[in-house]
Amino acid sequence: MENKTIENGVPLLEKSIDGIDCPDFQVPQRVPQTSSSKLMAVSKSTCSKICSKSFLYDRLPFLSWGQTYDLEQLIGDLIAGVTTALTVIPQGIGYAPLAGLPLQYGLYASIVPGFMYCLLGTTRQSTVGPTAVNSLMSYNYAGGSPYKAVTLAFFSGLIEIMAGILNLGFLIQYISGPVISAFSSAVSIQVITSQVKGFFGIYFPGRGFINVWVGIFKNISSIQPYDTAVGFACMAILYFLRRLKEFDWCEGADKETKRAKVIKKTKWLLSISANCLVVVLTSLLAWIMVDVAGIDVLNLTGEVDQGLPAWQLPWEFNRNTTLATGNGTSASEGPLEVASELGIGLLMLPLVSILQHLAIAKHYAGNRKMAASQEMIALGFCQFVGSFTGSMAITASFGRSAVNNISGVRTPFGGVFTGIIIILACAFLSPYLAFIPTSALSAVIIFAMFYTIDYNIGRALWKAKKVDLIPYTLTFLLGLFVNVETGLIIGCLVHVGLLLYSSSSPALLVEHHDTHTLLQPQYSLFFPSVDHMRGEINTAVSTSESTLPVVIDMTLVKEIDYTAAKGICALVKELKKTLTFNIVCSDKSVSHVLTAVYGPDLVLCSSIDDAVKVTVV
Image (cartoon, rainbow, N blue to C red):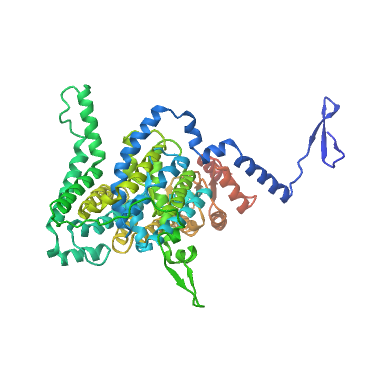
């Protein structure tokens, strides 16, 4: 074959077959690309991907399921949406005071998510709205100020959208199961503690686990008997209704009859709408006592603003406060000024929201691959758009998502029906929310929190791996007695530290045979483990008091970095002065690194038998 050049200067090859030149067949040689051409190629590839139909379907999932949407799915979504709304309304108005906000803000936070998640979400069961964790954290950073709480949701949404676009979902993997469990349990106990005052009908300043329980015992004589009775009665009703669907009362012997099916369905409906029933019944009782009988013995929530929220900038939501300037004039406090007051909350709240949301999406994804990035984008837009209508920080809820699932939701369109009912509640039901007993709301939240605490994980960790109790205990205790964010951060850092320590101290199997001494690292080797591994090998060789050949078996080492390879090779060169050394390595990437560091003189064997034969010869 001969090289020739055509007019554009690209070298070509002519193919010859059986000695006969074939000038018509010419293969251009590869010409190195310039940086500008590479940039153009990447830009073209990115643009073609963004403009493709598959990308559009990935970013707008409703385009996929919307093509096959039918009447049967519509009916299923309608039933699930209405049923879920019966849970959203009482929980929403219960979580608002937990964030230090008026009751209507719990409803405001439940309007937009159903519509936005329908367009962008991929998990039909997920129900996005206010949660106890987010409400508690919102109070910690926004201090019960409506415009600060709404602005916090605004920036949280932006951060979540950017995290989804940049595919940062992998960072959640560094938060371990024990840390997540301890965090959730600590938050649940904190939420229960925050509701104890309303449950017993006593009020005193202060929040936090220690302050509240000390205050309860100091003011035990001020406990209101009527509020306490309503609270315990609500707890009993909630427990009864939760277990109701498990009993076969009144269904008869034949479970397939129409009567049995109707009764079973009725018990199921009563069970999943327990929160709403308790709130409605106690509100009706309070209205009769106050307005009809003139008996005022219960603490009620009080007047609630009626109507839909106005569309406003988050940092100006229901706010008239201005800042004084140096020249005597006044200026509105802008988003950056509000953001500076929120501090680390701008990082912690999005992190915890994403953590909760992805856990639910992963749970319902099952064996299917979860679209983590798209879920973060969907959650971000729910928060971002919702902040313009007064929404506090939101995320997916395990309890409401479970209700949505067992109600037979077929697509994310079920959230639209939930949103419509919330809008109707804001428009017409707000005046009646004033008669809700605070002890009833507290009972609803306390009862829900009992089922979010993992009671068995401590025993499981003790049986399985005791060292995991360290980050679990730290996260739980710090979350309970300091604050939940500190517990989460410290727990993560400690568990990552334990992980790094274990990777820096890989085990070395030492076996003394008649013909050789075998040394076998049990894990991959990286730079933190260099000193430990060198020390272990030195100790094994020196304590054996033998001149037998040494075989280092690296078949279990699947990865090795430059520093680790350099340390191992230096040790081998040093010990080769007095002992015979051979290395067994079958992994090509590990062999390449070792050869590059040691030099061409390195001899690698493919098996222990080959290494023994070489050393014996």
